[in-house]
Amino acid sequence: MKLRNIITIIILVLLTPRATPSCDVFNGYNQPWPRGSDGLVTIEYCFDNDQIEEKRESVIKTGLETWMEALGGRASPETGHALKFQHQTDYYCSINGQWNPRVPKNTLQLKWLQGPLLGENGGRASVGFIPQSGPNGGNNYIEVSPNAIVELLVHEIGHVLGMGHEHQRADRDKYVKYQCDKVEGYQKAVTCAAGLVALDCEFMGHAYVVNNRPYPPFNIRSDDYDLTNDDQSVMHYGSPEFAAGPCNPEAPDGCPLLKYKNPNRHEGGYETFLQVDTPSDLDVEWVKQTYPYMPPPPGVRNP
Image (cartoon, rainbow, N blue to C red; front, side, top):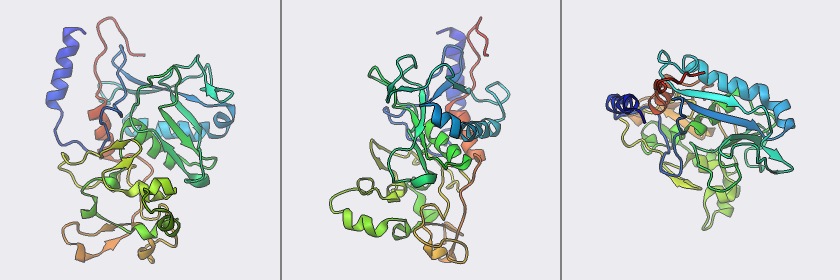
């Protein structure tokens, strides 16, 4: 590595505040996406097949564009980030259900949602970059349902970048009230859960567990963050998400999540809130601190 780039990295590390916004899950298994020789963090993605490309391409691309717009545009010294999303247009990810050997194995795979847990409007994603040790790809993915909307894609892209759920921070109970029994499927899960965890029982309560996810284990690192809970983050569920019954300002007791009006005085009551559909200022700051712009080496031009 050239001396100029080494010095640039050192300066960026020294200037990066210790208290970073949002919360990530980097632990060695889940990592930040790697930087290329051009200085950019390029995330290549492919569609699993022609059906998902035909039906969900517009929603997925709008989700990516929403993030880039929030970041101020393409990677540059002016925007301060190094992210670039690049569609692998030559091939689909899979051939007859198997990884396409022509596609680089660390490519982000966009595929249909597997299993009934999240329904016809849901989705899920890998968190951060997960290096592929074997010959095939598939570690890095976004799964979407046939009716997935842009708001969902913006959230799942946050996961891909390495962001955890804001409402799973270790300090979340200071800011929000969680009512597990108001989550859809609670009664069925209670019957199932002897000796098991929520995810084994296909219960969405697993997405609310503080500071932990079981597969694989990781911590949502908020302990070092001297910042308030960001209920405007795209990574924070709103009150109605996965509610078993009515949940609205007139029926707040039916909501899985409620925001305390005063985090320091819970007796002041709580209120409902909605999940946002665009990255917050702190979401953007997290990306720029995690994937800061760096000038390319001498003789290399960013495309």
